[in-house]
Length: 215
Image (cartoon, rainbow, N blue to C red; front, side, top):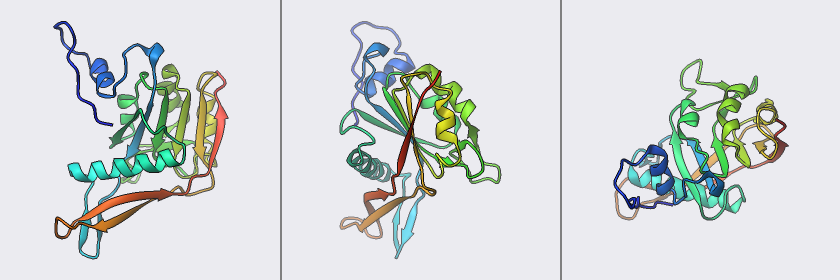
């Protein structure tokens, strides 16, 4: 998952896109696009029975992404290899982090219950909700083969099918259907650090439905 940046054969500044491609082990030629990018809402810290776990540490993020990858790969949401993970703190990160060097995109987000919209930071009363049209403008030019939306009511609130109407033919939108989408974290007590919990695995309630792009 983590690869080092290799130097270019001649001296010039490395562009942001080249740096991203190299870190993910991908060629900058979009005709050779491959792999899956997973953008996810940062999980909350956890305290239970005097044990604490924090995503904000290097160990915490590593444990979460390892467990998330194992879970998604077992459910055939992502391939066993060629998947990169990036946390989001706001819905604007979708446009900032999405890249056409990847073939597929997975968004683990909050999903509105009263309309076709997804969000990342919903801590405030209003939230940073984005409707299907706004997300469609970002994703349509990137022409992903599959866009998977893992969030509550992503089918029932019409976000997944509506997003498909903004994407080109050849693209497929996959959304969770069946109400709430919950990712449960499972912890063990650290044998090395007193008071620290170790995140060992994740589980969730996948129920998916797909929609074809039409543009």
